[in-house]
Image 1: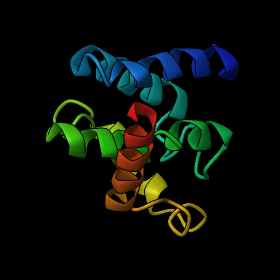
Image 2: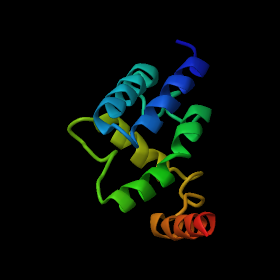
Image 3: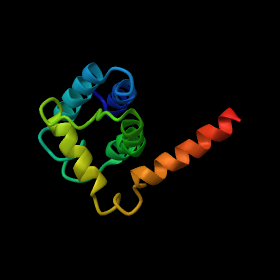
Length: 118
């Protein structure tokens, strides 16, 4: 599977997390395991473009979890590799300083939705 094909599958899977957590999580977990080959990130030992592409959804995923009061990507039993990847990605030296705080992003989302409904 070429990386661009994986991106299409992964983006679909990640968006599926919002709607059907079981199936989407399992597909994304399998894709991560297959593509990373036991390494901490999708392309090996360092953060790659694919990690950045998928990692950019993590902040909004956490906002969704906060709003729903339900964790979608925090099940060590079902998606241990994906949970570890998300933790490593968010705490990476290039990512941590720019990753928005969940509470601040949630407040921003409330403002945006309020404006769009007005």
